[in-house]
Image (cartoon, rainbow, N blue to C red; front, side):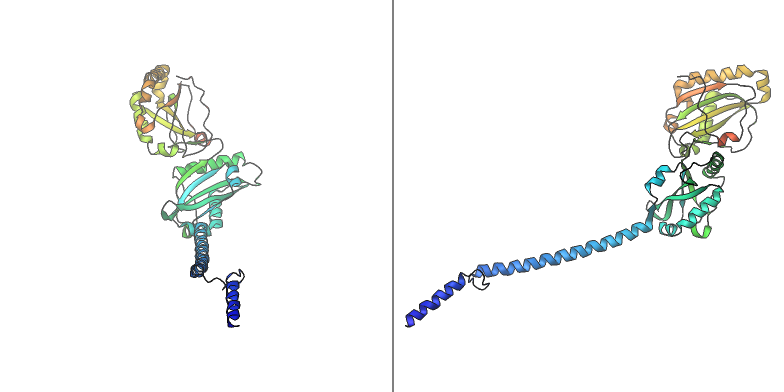
Amino acid sequence: MGKHSNENDHDQVQQQNLDPENPQSSGSPCRRCFSSLSGLFGLGCVIVLVLSFATLLSAIFWLFPRRSLSQCHAPGIVKLNASVQAYFKLHKPASHVISHKGRLETDIFRSLDLRNTKVAILSLHQSGRASKYTDVKFAVLPVPTDSKIREGSLVSLRSSFVQLFAQRSNLNLTTSSFGQPTSFQVLKFPGGITLDPLGSKPVSGVAALTLSFTLEISLSEIQDKLDKLKNQLGLVLCLETYEKIHVLLSNEEGSTISPPVTVEASVFSSMTIMENHPKKRSESLAQVIQTSRASNLGLDNSVFGKVKSITYSTYVEGKTLESASVLAPAPSPCFPSLC
């Protein structure tokens, strides 16, 4: 009787050990250990994932507000359709300028004094690593936007941009909000842009010869080299004491930061000399140009690069320069080519 009872108890224990639905049925120490490690490992993964996700969210919320405070951009379609674009720099943090964007557009518009147009900020962003400076790009748009800026407004606007680039005037911005703008550049202007270093000052004398050529540099780059350009041209042309050079600089794309630059250099002589020897001096200058063509017109190649598209015209009676030439697009060369 006792033996039969022991056998039943033994069978029940074996049945429990073989029951897959009983979590306590396995008597193996290894399996119990593995089960405990699996539970612990799963919990650790969950904790790591939660912490990683929280860190990612913190990074996103930290980066995006900083970006919005340090730069802003107009829609791409506005930049694409804006035919008049310019740039300047402000000695103010980008976060401050962005918060006054509407005021800045109003100030620029009033400074340019135009009608049937509006000013739109294309971009505001921190200038390099200097957090106290902001690069400003803006456009002048027609009103309505599906029309074109009137020709009279373009002439007036071109004149204003030339004056701003040459630093003969400045944008009248709210000083308390923006300070004084610097580094004005024209990025894009329909019909091109021409710079007269003399401004509206009259030029005396008669043009004995007008020389035109192209340099692969920008208006901004050549502006600081203008004296060197005139001196080197004067040396190669062997100018007399009664002669001087007047230069006009043009970019067909209407940009002061993109090459090339078309240089129109006119040699002016006194009226008396040209009355007595009108053709002789012009022919002498033309001969000098032809012989100096192979030597880059006497210009330093390391400073100005290679001279291209050399053309010239000799003395034409009554030819004078007018201030209006600064406002008009550069004419296409129509002189006999030396190439």
